[in-house]
Structures are given as C-alpha cells and as structure tokens.
Image 1: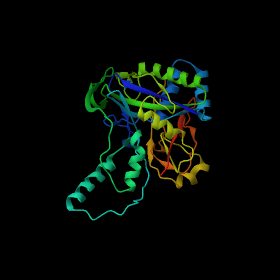
Image 2: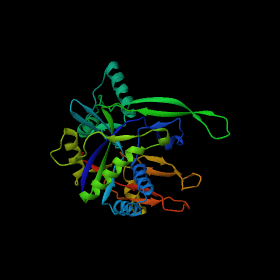
Image 3: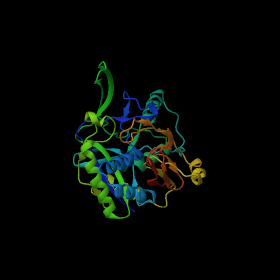
Image 4: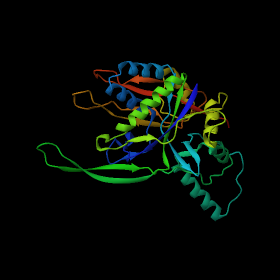
Length: 335
C-alpha cells in the first residue's frame, strides 16, 4: 500500500462536535476522526446522486484498498512542514535509575509531567526521540501544534411564528500557516486521485457542524504529497518510514478503530483508550434522529500487531445503510 498526504486549510471557523461532551454546540474540538470523514464523503456522493461511487467507496474501504487516518494538525514554518501525530498511548518503563534530585529539580520534573499528561500530539520527526526520552525519565518540552483561537459566539434561532431565541456555538479559527492533514492509503493510484477530487469538492460545502452557517469551508493548502522514502520535508520522510515499518514491536493506530470479535484478545493485550462516537441520521424529507452511541478505540492506541478493524452498519432501521468507518491505519514503533 502507498500513501498520500493532503492538507486542509480552513477559510472559515470550524465546529467539530465532541461526542464525549454529548455533542453540545457549546463544546467543540479539533478532533475530526476518520469515521466522520468517511461519513462526510458518503454524504457528498449521495448528494450528487452517485450511487455507483458510493458503493465503490464502501467496497474499496471495507476490503482495505482505501484507508483513512483521522485529520491531524500541521504547521508550516520557515518553508518546513511540521506534521503532528497522536501521542502514543504506551507505557514506557524507565531504563535508568533516577538520581536524587534537589527540590527545584523535583518541582521542574513535576511540572513537566503535568504538561506531558495534557499533551495530545508529538511531531513526527520527534516521535522516537520522545519515546526514548520517557524511558530515561526525561520529560522535557516538546513542540506542540498551533490549535488556533477558540470563541463562543451567540446565534439566534428564528423559526416562523416562534419567538427568536439565542443560543451559543463554540468555534475554532485556525491561522493561515496551520491546518489539518490526513493520510490516505491506497492500492490503486486512480482511487487515491478520485478520493482527493471528492474531498476538494467537499470543501465548498465544508465539514463539521453548523455548515449551514458557513462553518468548516476549506481548500487544499498545498499540493498533496505522494509519499516516498526521500520525502519533500523531514517529517513526511520520517512518517513514510513509520508507515512502512512491518517489523516493529508496537503499532500505533492513526484512526478510530472498530475491532472485529476475533480481534478482542489482541486488543486486550494492547494499550488503548475508548472514545464515544455519536451522531444523527437525517433521511431526506424526514426528521433527524439520533444514532445509537458506539464506543471505538481512539487514535494513538498501541498494539503488538496491526488490527484490521471493520466498517459497521449503524443504520438502526434507517431507509438506507449508514456506515461507521473503523479500519486501522498504523505506524510502527520499535522500542
């Protein structure tokens, strides 16, 4: 399998609902996960009436010929592209005996450990150094992405014959030099180009919540990178090597994962975190209904082998299938 990096820069603020917080408008996050991205692509194909394309997307993804990562942050600085990956959910045993520290050293280390717990991302070129430093008991400062400016804005709900009522929406505005990138795995280059064209088309209507209010519109900030071992930048070359690693001691997932029943023993032997996934079904001409909540394995979870995952039908009696994407896409971590 080969891989493409694509880069989304946002022309308007974004509102990505937070399932863990009940999907309330007052809460949002920069996490845009692979299952939501896959659902948005399906909706785009359905909106233009491309039933054949919709069936093809599902078939190729379910068979593993197309794989999607979560959208992850990037920053472009001084003509260098900084790509960030999820912080690995991985316990590292100390391999060095820590010396007795002074009170000031102890205080500094405690502060660094607190900062480490809050970290969500690690730069791709620093990932292995980060893991090795934890083994040595060193928690120094690590570069973090620019996550933009958060705002709470007031909107007014106006419906015919009803009293106008205010409500609040949390939005995030990303700077021009930052955005979100994704990794697209493909077996056939034509399939990869087709998905990229569909994504570019999707940027007109936007992604995330409150698109009717203009949120989430984007364009491709740079040309997609067809990854290879040489790379265009430091980070994409490192990331390609990690994606191609097949003899690693651990594999970190870069997308939400929905394992099959036979994979449960491998999951139990790994280190992972669950995330709650919610949403709504809105059949044409019908009232929106809430999907059943489902818990999936979060990106950054680590396992001793690659777990394939699945695409599940969560239609719950809908007039058409509703697919929840949960296939694995991994980087290898050798410790």
